[in-house]
Length: 350
Image (cartoon, rainbow, N blue to C red):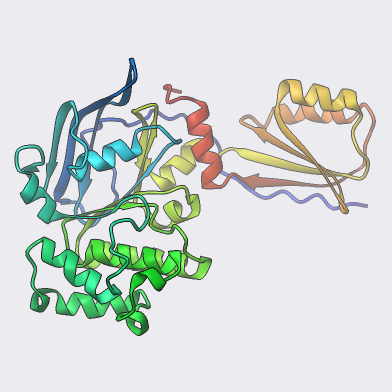
């Protein structure tokens, strides 16, 4: 007799995207200080004879000590948004305020408030040592060695760069170069830090250490950190809040925990001794989101359901051949599945 294992899962709830919400969603201190405000940002690129609207009238805020993740498919507008904040891209419409300063009218002042890692580790000089890079990029913002000495020692120690501090970074692995770039972004204790793929090239252990370090820095230095990444586990573990952008528009703006609660669905794993008939598979594929998998343990069916009552229909289909069921499990989606589900719904109110 085969065992039947059922694990509990949260039920689906209806959700309205919170784009342009005036109320902070970051669940931190009650009196949060705003350090980034973007109002109705738009940017169009001209490509040959066509115009491409990269960012469409988006608005959001960032708060002291908050870590905000920005997710979206390639070409969704993430990079344009980040580069607009960093004063690298000249946007068409809207306003951006960094620590209360208009970043179009006072670009030099804004640059003093921002640290950034953009497009991998390209913001470091390969012929300089790790230590020289930190000193050099601090100097560009008007900081002398005495002003950054404590930070310099701290970052070299925390990012495990102390033993290679006097080596040229061209000798480093991609992951080590990335760590130097991240250290350069934080060296002057800026109000706002922009991190584009901060775990790029890092091994699993170093990436996990980076998670803890970024969370600690955000809290200790009360820095607002904006992260773009394809590493869903990193975003889930580090970020207080997530923006999801599709085709230049914000389609979701909420905490990771709430997005998971609203969009996470039940995934049923049914393990059978014998394979299904083609007719049974076709019927399941017509009515449900389903995946079939064959292993040494048996024949698996993975079904994503938004309503438990559909199980009666599924068992009716399975009963046509009366396959022997070895086990049934209820699994939770991971955050990557939640992200894909939000994109699938295309940001419509549901």
